[in-house]
Length: 560
Image (cartoon, rainbow, N blue to C red; front, side, top):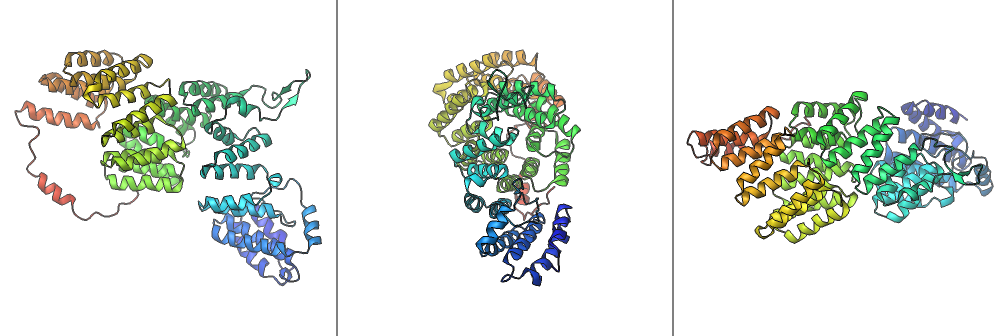
């Protein structure tokens, strides 16, 4: 043969994909690979060229080339086909990264075509290709890909079947464990799938591959998180971290849970520890970005955005981080970045949550409902429920808001945040304030350190004219928590009761803790006007000019 097949296979194995692609063109057009006289050589040559195109990320060309290879494969005489199939090694990988110079396997090529469709986000086409592979012929990679495709298509039952097959093949496919937990499987269901061998007593055991039972603990952690038992999940992950210190995956899982339940300082610490160990990690960094925004730490937020862009600008976490960064500069640009993160990965929950919050801020509450519902369809998250409830309240859908809040309570029966959410709905109506008070107090009994419930209860006291109760409640919390939001709320109560000097000291205290606190800045500016005897609600002289300037043409900003 003019161009030896083993040479292109060697180039592929050594990662020289561009050279392999160019050589593949020679191989395919070689007289020896004549379609009429040597269809099997033509088919193999096209598949090798397809492999090179796949690795070069030329997915459309790869799909076309693979399909041509299959067409030639189908016209190979039956005896050749049978011989070719029987000569295939039984342990050959179906990955596009795997190259074998023996005859092609139709199922492997179908898997490669499906992988190309996945890379192009064409899930339906990928699934159609995978369903053409007989069940008995599917290997571990194929089952995992099919599980993801069925899940993306919201076909839960076949997705569960595929993930279970993965664990029967290999119990260490951790993403299959996580997926099954999120799809509602119990710890017992998952562990029963692990390969088991009888011990001396004749009982089945998987201790032979898991002597320390760490894998079972990992399953328990993921099942706790999936069922919204965040406390239990944290305990299991913390135990695992003692066994595997400085484990990046565990640190990120712990930090994500802490971010969800509002342990912001602990979450930031763990995200930063993970970045210290591995400065190029991208996973969950958008969660870290949201926490930095809440802390008004814009210097760290800007650095994080620059770092992520330089690591991998194609990940959804990068665009959520950019959206967070642009939120205070230009909400329109921030919204476009949130949308981009969802286009990159339709299952990226932080993208939906951020989009919903941006729409809610922009007073597009009905559109925000759609975004928060999208997040909840993927996985229940207290932040999605919070956004959904406040979106319904924003356009006076109290009945729907109460239903969503109760849905959160049902999903998270031990969550103080869910109790507070029901209280928020009742507090929106003057006739429900007594009920709201009870829910806020229940939330504080369940989680005494939950400042959100304390602030909401203080606000309720103020609305009903119990300013003294509000002040005593907030001052009690200030003894244990030096939090800027507590100082701001106290300042607002004092300002409302004309105790301007006390209000001033608390606004200043808030700014000492967080110099970027916008509520404290605006409150202090308003207070200074009051102290000078100026009406704080009077419009500024140059306000009209500023409005006219804002209407000018806006250029599309750079990424940063």
